[in-house]
Image (cartoon, rainbow, N blue to C red; front, side, top):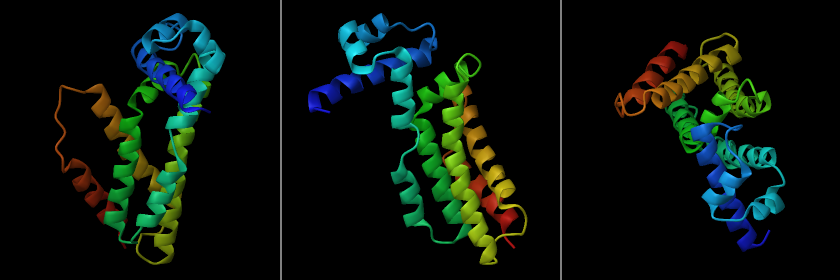
Length: 193
């Protein structure tokens, strides 16, 4: 794709995310997307074809990227607390970066369950990474015995719940900077043999 086409596509994607996060999928029209992106409706249709194709592109492009998985693997130290904190911070970075996509997913979970499923797949990738990590740590004798996926679910549910609470309470409650570190410390102590 040429640079000009990429710029146009990016403008359309950005406009769509902003509009859909505010209004929901069904309420947003191609005409609104085009106006918000400062392009013609025909350009939107030529670039993506349909509103659903735009949303699919947004989800595929932004939710989870292999560099995150690679970054986690490169930074693993096999020190439980620091590794869980590193993974949690990366997970929150992905969630924050894609907050509007998650809002669209929540708003449209009943009308367009495939969007919500794609978001779930993203969370499942992180869950898989944490599960494998905990399995490795169990083999090294550094983590309590038990189903590694159940242990990983505890960590991921905390992180997802923290994210959802921060989105829902945005602007009404300040989040202490050390909250994540303290919570992960408590979880790590509970997992240590």
